[in-house]
Length: 462
Image (cartoon, rainbow, N blue to C red):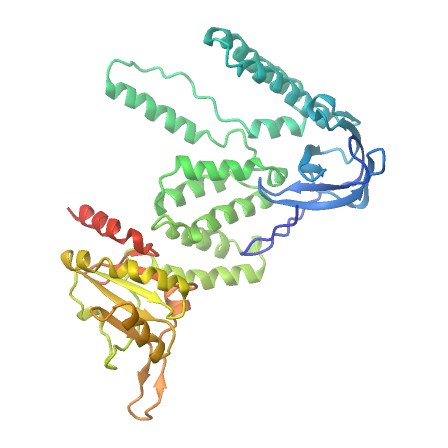
């Protein structure tokens, strides 16, 4: 385990709900081994807060004068083994046997964790019975009722505890019985639409978006990822609308920052075409629009990123790419009359570009049949390397460009195109697809998907 830093920025979460900690443990089956105390930051990141060495009897003590933020923690030992603990009481002890952790674990001075493991033990017991392969459907029904009854009783008995909120956040909403008639296929479709809409509308009901402790659990990240993957149409308008609805409920600063970051980072470079517009919406509304949430470097970076991405959204005119051809003449994109234009941006020395080039050439006949032109341009201003690439990969039938311009007055070479900041070329190759008006209809399309993408564009036009 390690502290995982975002590629975008490092969050600094500040809270007043801290206490000094003193956590004693005794693990049978552990001897002279390291034990880690860490809190969750989503389900796939953990932040280590303390490390100790257990003695020969498996006894150890996490103790510190610094304070610990509340939430769900894990105590990790023996490399692959760990237990989850609720960090509400900062002074408690526990013991367990590694041969059967769930059955043996016992807590002292922690109502939260006692309730937590009571819940887990009972649920494990019931589901072990339910999942017996030999059990008939009729025999499963009373056990499923027992699960529901136990959950309701447990939640009622522990309503004042954070662990109750924690467990509730992991559940899906229960869909009320459909009251309409079911006599036809259209009736079934209506019922399914009702179930989908109810499930989607109430998906976050069990998640308290006003509680900063939820950031330090696996459940908020899981909810967000599942919601946007399974329940939201993957287009800019739908993603932006659903993000706004969720954030309207997220009044806690830490939760709000986490949600904004997770959604924005998902769609900044998402492989689903056109969803980067959702990133622009989130960046403008919640980073630029709410600067108090962020440090100045983050806001500045977001402004810079918007400046690059926004002009490259689908439907935008392709920015001017200053290129000259093999004869040294300026290339005028507007003079290209093809129905579609594929712009292939490469580095002659890039191994991946060399792998993709033959795949592009293999589409030559298809492109001719569909009136698709190709502009292949080198980001490296080396004429020899550029011409060698053109010859080696048989690009000569296409428009080949390079950003080298001879100044007629001085006779010196000049460069005009900023590939990184104007065309978002941070790796190569990069493929854009333009329509006849030279508006962007596709970007970062893998070469092997270009044929299918052109067919999709043709179908959409009909």
